[in-house]
Image 1 (cartoon, helix red, strand yellow):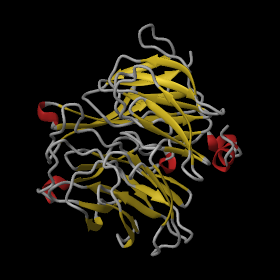
Image 2 (cartoon, rainbow, N blue to C red):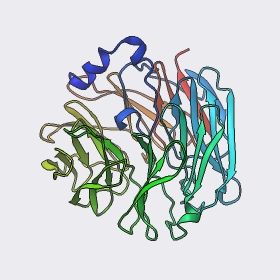
Image 3 (cartoon, one colour):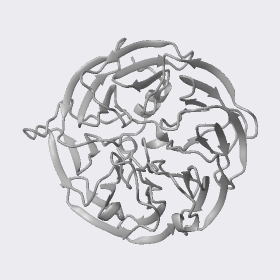
Length: 405
């Protein structure tokens, strides 16, 4: 069972606070992929409209996950010739009505793998603004009514940014700084921008190689949050306000699966899965364990207290955060390819394949139990966003709300 301090902490929150848990970045709050109060339906189908509250056709394709900020769902799209037109759209959570939409022509290279999209990175929000980032390296800031506040054409500022298959690293907001990780064979860097003005705060050079993993926020035993970033060649901890490097680990993490953080520990897909403990800023993290049985594929790991879940091909595995020991594994039938990361709602895990098939697994017992396999008629590459009673899913063509009727 999920008997963890993290789960108990959320369940003890006041109901009004717990229910106001917005999904404001890739994998949600703290990139934990967890909504303790969410109770979406276990079964749904677009064939007969079972538990489909609404679906809205979008102006272009997307491989990104949606955000939920208050009563607004935010999603990004790209379309037109060579995916040069980029969109950020606000949709009413209750009705599915489009509240606002901004459309621009990108300034950078819009090209990506045909399977992906220029709108591959998931947007981020600080609760007052939306920061939409695209594979073309266009960074757009709008308010919650969709008004443009500022815009940066990073592809024009750094014309040697070059990755033929496209970028998908999602932005992150820490202490008033919007952080983007752009790592390619050409210009390659992490940069921090002022969330109110878009002004460059700092820029740090990175290895010149393709990387699609997203940065995360890491706690320390000091007073400051730390930025954690991985590439195919290293793991670094960076001060999000200044760009100062706190530590660097010589490692070879996955360039697709992102790191997952739990308190002062972080877990990276490197030689399987490797766990580290971080101390004060400026000190090297301590390696705790390595497990080759808990190797993530394209999805990022999910951690709740003493349980960790990874997806590799069509197999979902649970391990222990204490020592990396594999506790059980469950094969998902006819899964196809899986690119989205799972989300946990209460004690149920929801995982979408690229075919729009959703596996619902009970992870609250001694073994994983497949409760249902549901289907929507769309390609799904991004991770869903849970609300109190629903899942918001961005498909290739549509934005979906899955909720009980």
